[in-house]
Amino acid sequence: MISFDGLAGIFAVVTSAVAVGGALAPLLRTTLEKALGFQFDKRLEEFRYGVRVREQAARIAEYLALHMLIEETDSKEDYARINKLGWELALYLPSEIYKHLRDAAINRTPDRNSLTALVAVREYLLRGEGGELTPDDISFHYPGIRKIIKAKGMTTFPDGTPI
Image 1 (cartoon, rainbow, N blue to C red):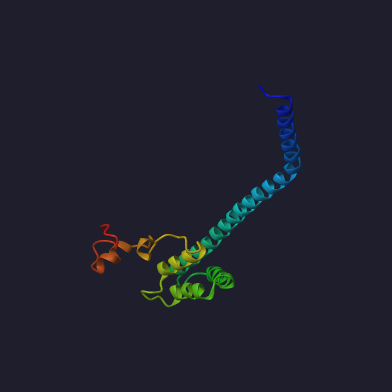
Image 2 (cartoon, helix red, strand yellow):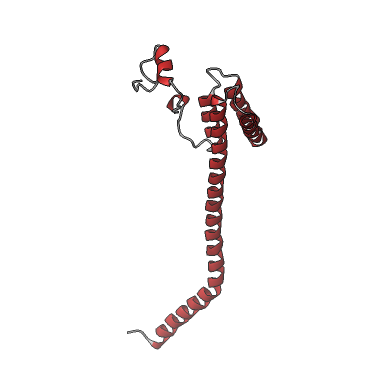
């Protein structure tokens, strides 16, 4: 059986714990709120970056698509649109990425073409977290593309898929 002295001791410990807990409660609440706020801010920043990436990616894809299809007979408005997009990209892309895009559009080579440019831009926009996508993995569409590829003697795509 617990004596009066033992009961008084237990009461003193409980009272002290409640008093200390009450004094620490605001500190614990503030610490918890800061930690949760930091996590929310971090996720919000990641979301905003993702939105910017998708917007930039859309501009880059539009630029490359327009450049692939533009003809000498196209309107001044078409040329104004592609120039505006190209200049806009020059304002925010790192110089090496922009030069890769420019070369893909103007001075195509096997090492610098629309597909290699897309892979380079993807790597940049996704901060190196884009996986292992290669130019051979990217699809593109062009009138008569299968005939052009077959005329070059290819019977399968680089991944082995029949043409």
